[in-house]
Image (cartoon, helix red, strand yellow):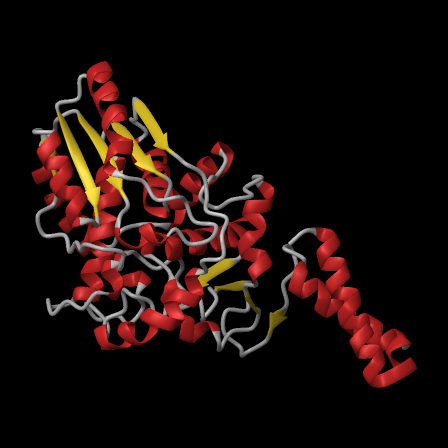
Amino acid sequence: MGMCSKIKRGLSTYKQLYKKIGKKALHPWYIRIYMLGYDLVNNPYMICFNDYGEKNKDKNIFIVELADDWVPTAGFFALLNRTVCTLSFADRFNLTPVIKNWKGCAYEEKGGFKGTTEVFEYYFKPVSDVTYEEAFKSHNVAISTAPNRDAILVEYNVDDWFHPTEEYCIRMAELYKKYISLNEYTANKLKTDMDKVLQGKKTLAIHFRGTDSKLNTNYHPKSLTFDDYVLEIEKVMKKNDYEQIFLATDDLQALAQFKEKFKNIVHYEDVFRTEGNVSVAYTENSRENNSYLLGYEVIRDAFTMASCQGLIAGKSQVSISAYIINKAYYDKYVSVNWIDKGSNKNGVDWMDIYNKEYKDCRKKVN
């Protein structure tokens, strides 16, 4: 929302207040309270500290909170990258971050996983030594707002989350390196799996986003087809002498097409893939720890792509994250090729689709 729109909305809200209480609304106290509230809602650098107890008086604690109604609808790297965006705010102002649980997301296991109910900590180390429960017994605590989360996008001129600037990616890589650390279980499992599939060969990573991307929802990248990739892959393979192709995809049909066309394809055999236009997150699966595995498998795909020497991909939070992770930990891409048809501008709203078709399905899966 532009600044003019925000001002118009603010004036409209104040007019409604004036209608309700008359000239009292002109009292300096009302104006002061209104302006404070308006700043809190709209100013990306505004936070409000609360006193919940006597603990951690030497710390300014910042709760990294995502929108509760959005969390169940989001893919793994959408959740992670919005979390990292919010961590950017904490980092800028030297606050102690504490991540609020991604409750209700597609990756949450009933009863938790490996001794924790915090979904982030299924895979990563905590970002600070303060727990969420302890934070609400502490002296100086602020809870993140939507403008706080968006501050990094404003600072690095990102108008479209699926088309980030290079400066944004560099900053995100710094934040990944500082805050996003795999826990021991994930790191060991990931190394074993990656070594088996890559085998030290010069590898070109391909990311093909299928399933629900075919819905072409508003403001999301336009979906791609197998044919969109073929010439690009052939050109890049010839130029850079790659020994093999690592394919990351959630789509069974795409997997079959790539394997038929390119004989030096490697991929993970145990990934849960589907056909059609329904995400794996909303498709029932009886395997043990399915919700955890959905998260692990996409993390593994992203880190494997990041450790390759080249990348060809459409725009998605997974492929963008692979690019950022490469900058953070590997920095060895010799070629990066984006296949991009732009973003959809239509009336197909993902939140509407989720609420009508997938919300109850998610409950069944969990």
